[in-house]
Every structure is written in structure tokens, then in C-alpha cells.
Length: 231
Length: 236
Image (cartoon, rainbow over all chains, first blue to last red; front, side):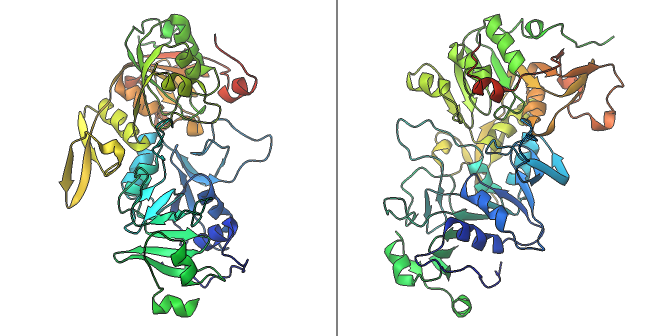
């Protein structure tokens, strides 16, 4: 995927959540079948460039998911994977769970956008459990999504609230999938997972490679020349 | 003459036995057969194994069944949701066993069980803690886990309407696990808002063919779990 030049305005120290989602949305080709995870991934739907039509899949059984209904029009039996009320757009379809996950596992969905606790430089993803002994384990569809969907993008803050890197050499939290992440969008930029490790695809405005390296728990390679010229 | 109508939810679940495996449809409240679950609470069977995507919310429906300590074990992909307090309490107290299964693996295990397939290989979960203890095998250079098909004694499902032969259509995203659970269980019970005569549903739009359904119960105005939860309702 070659994104068009970014038009995201500068806010000093990296991108806001909205700007990250906006930057990610630029990379989704017209006509893609897309599954957006709960939380920040869902924001990307608000920033799809004009002229592109994406078809949203929600794993509880709907293709062609539309935005939230107006107040008063909610239907408790029309919800998304986050159990929020949604709508079904013209051309939508409903199906049962085995079909829904055949779409996922069978490689029919083009893109999955997920949040992360940690991503490793080899594309491992940890996003379902901190491994804390008192936590209620819950996994949902994340393992299926990252095992089967053609491309997996992660959108996440570059570091935890306490400043710990989330892009790391090896995940310390329990894994969701091994070698599954293709690209990571953070407040500091866009990073590809390559055979050589994390490589800058684009830096957020006002962010230099040194800053990224300070806040990353794994080596970060500079952008290839073509990308560097663009930014 | 075939007539799968049960007179009431109570009649439809009367023969659930202690230790039975009960698959319960629903994704959150969408498709949760609340009236059938409440009938099962009244009916009294214990030591159940429940197969369900979630573990209920508030103190109604599936959460009420768990709170009544009737469920010994739950097979589930996402047992925590907003307003889910009953399951965490019993889980921490060691009063309910959890088998955590990735959602797609859960769906396929149920489908396989219903389709006569005892086991299959899947890429989901490879290299994760949920792969521990599972056989794996490589096909075309990629690793897969062996997962077992799941079968149940009873399925409790919510549809929109059915005919007396058990052909069912569903409502929007309330379909979720209903069709595959109906296939996977010895006795499948479906609550619907209306039961019609054979011919009343166009065969082209039947989602679950009647061969997979044993009993249909009319619940004309089913409650919505979220409304009960926000009203602070409990059952019984």
C-alpha cells in the first residue's frame, strides 16, 4: 500500500488519537473489507477519505455495518463486536458466527485494525491479557483476526501512560499471535514490521528518529529513501 | 404430522438433566434466550456445563443461572462484559470452571460438532498460551492447532420466527451462534416471537432447517436483557 502524502497538521509532540486514526485511514484502499477492533481502531472509520467506500465487518455477524443509529432508533439485536448499537447499510448482510469467522480465518477480510498492549519487532502481538493472576481471562476474536486476515494494522500509543515502550524486542505479555502485525500507527509515526525489524514509514510532524528510538524497546531503522523524500 | 411446538418455555426445558451440556446462544444480549434461561433456572438442574460466547450481565438471564450456582463449568470466549459481576465473583471464589476459547475456534468447534467432524486444525491461537497442551501440526509450512468438535445435550436459542416443523429465521445480529448450536445439540430448543404453519416461511429464506430443531416455543414479546439490567432486575 502506498499512501498519499499526509495532510495531517502538526501538534508539536506527535499525533493525537484522531490524527493517528486519520493517518491510518489514508492507507485503506477503496473497496476493502475491513474489521475494526474496539476502541481506537473504530476511530479510523471517521476519517476515510472522500470517494472511498469501505465495507465494515463486525465478527458478531454483519457485513456492511454503518454508524450508530440516531437516539431512539437503537435495536438491541443490531450491535457490533463491542456490543454497541450500529446500523446496517444498504447492501449489508447478516450471517452466523461460523461463517463470520470463515471470512476472517479464510483470508477473505482484507484488513484488521487492532489495538495493542505490545508489538514486537517480529510482528508478534499482545493485546488480550496482562497475565495478571487475578484478571478474568477473555480473548474474544482477536486471535482469529490476527491469524487469518490478510493484513493486520495496529494503532496504539507509542508508550504506556507511565512511559514504557509498547514497541518492543519481545512481548512480555501473553501473545495474541506470532508474526502477524504488518504495520503500526502510533503518535510518533508509522512503522512497518519488516524482516529487519521496525522501519519508519513516516514520522509524525515534529518527531525525529532519535525521539522514536528513545521511546522504542527495539531497534528502529530509518525510512527508506523513497518514504524519506515524501515526508 | 410433525409439530415441534412446546406449550411453554417450562415444558421445553423440562428434561434438562443434572450434568448436561447446554449451549446458550447470544452475543451479549443479542440473541440471548432470556425466557428459556429463566425457565431453566425454575427447572432446577445442576452441575451444568454451559457453552456460550459471554457469561451474562447484571443478574438476569445467563448471569442469573450462574449466580444460582447451577453452572459448574463454562466454555466461553469473552466472560467479562460491562455489568458483568456475577461470573468474576464465582470465578475468583473457585466456584465455576472456565475453558477459554478464541471466538472463531469456539464457533468452528460447535459447527464441526454439528457436522460430524470430531476435530480440525486451525491457525488461531498458535504460539499463544491457549495453545498449551494442544497437538499441533504443520501444513504447507504453517503451524496449526488441533481443536475438538463440540457437542451438547441441549441448545437454547432465540430466533425471530419459526414454523411448526422447526424451520427458523433470525433477527439481525441476534443470529450469531444460534444456527450452529442448533446443529450441535441432541435437543435444540428455539424461542421465537411467532410460530407459523408450515409454508408460512419462504423456504428460500429459512436460515436453520427444521431437521436441526426439536422444539419451538412462542415468546411473543421477549424481554431485552439490557432493559432488565438497567432496571436492576434479578431472577428469580
